[in-house]
Image 1 (cartoon, rainbow, N blue to C red):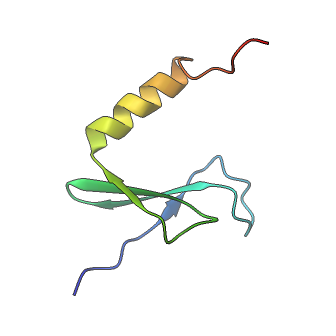
Image 2 (tube, helix red, strand yellow):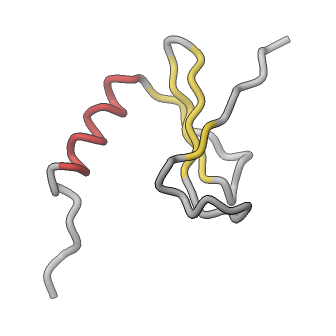
Length: 67
């Protein structure tokens, strides 16, 4: 039987019981991501891919388009 994943919410979520955040679970060597409003839909990826995504976000590569 597969071990249950331990999901963690982002510290930037609203802090309540609402479904407004991204959750992460680690099962070496894979990271699992899901939105709390659709917990049955899970994306599996690698730590390297997540690090690249976070770097792109924090460096402004995903800024809103100018209107």
